[in-house]
Image (cartoon, rainbow, N blue to C red; front, side):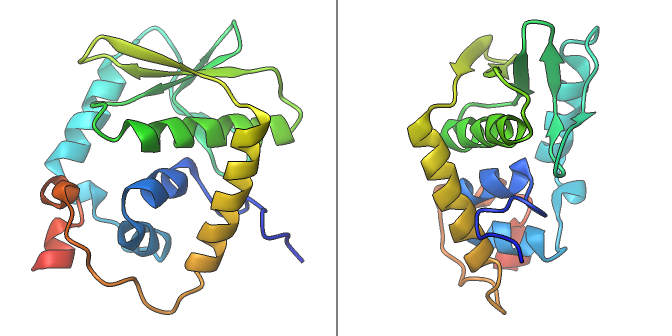
Length: 169
């Protein structure tokens, strides 16, 4: 039996969506994906591909996570288009550090990169973060067992969400 803090079947996207919109998280986890239709998502992918062209990207790691890139100084780099959802980006990167630490790959640190903004943010994982990630994983695992997605909750970010038409049509 899996422990509630087990990360199996969770990805960085789950952690990211948990911090943005739990309806989006539920839909994504249950196979309703709208990202392929979103122009904004496509622009983000293009920016990701065009940034740091000399480095290997989308490195498959453990338990379903994909790292944007990792450098020889043991820094995991996560590239994002905008810092408007920075808190979600920070927790996604901390989740990657958490999973890799559990696998014995340590010490590592992280760096959020916003090439369009020419901004970087260095990220570390501490004991309090690990406790919070454990709590988040438990909450996500419990939440995803619900038979129906949560009700629509209008937020400022809805207009730019890939799921906008699904939720509001």
